Length: 338
Image (tube, rainbow, N blue to C red; front, side, top):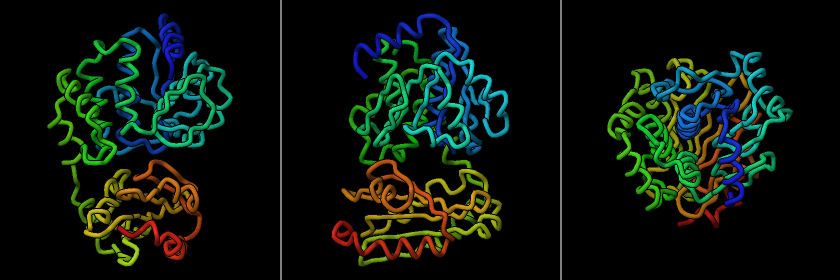
């Protein structure tokens, strides 16, 4: 995003507008943190602002300031379509291809609103009027902080905005332990704490809210963990039957894939989760070092993301998906050696 883009956006936002903010389908902490952080900022400027999430998200994110104002598209299609059709500006956050919004794709594609993309994933589509894309950033929430800086609006960051942005940075960096966490990330985090983000409270609200059923599901996932030692790979599978047994709720499997990656000698970790309602197997991938799971997901499993954290999907059965994965692995033997 160049200086002219910033100047254009400042001019665009200088008078009240109808603004819609859209995160990706199955929004995570970074998607909701950046969306609600921007929501609070634009509301301060007297814009008419609405966050529309494609679908529901985990309960552990619903304490975020402003959450009660969010519309879920899947349960309010007519209302959402009207807001999108009448919008002057649409911000798309934490994704860079409109198909990532699921059933919202068509209405967003047809909208004549000025679109502003802010995202840190690789290979963005060319749909936005203004695009702030930076794959070196750890999170869209850090980019949102820098976006406000570029607008000269850093002083507008209050406790609510700081809380939202801190949440997204924390969750997308694995509590600041991933390689994408830079010294600048820590400086941003320090500033957010200075502006009111309660780091201990945020951490507790996200990570210390386990249910008994979720811990049982984790035990099931760990009992299903398999390793391929000669290829430094670990994988976990969860069937729909197992999810049902432990009363699965959205967000319950968050972070499970990292247990595989925590094993000594493992470079590549994957979790396969059956979603019968959508007739897909959801796949999450994590890696260490230079093994590129973004490229792996794009090549074999209709996905993508980051070099060390990515996702994909399969329309095969759970067992057939795992068999395909096991068959593919040996062709990457050179890259899967420490």
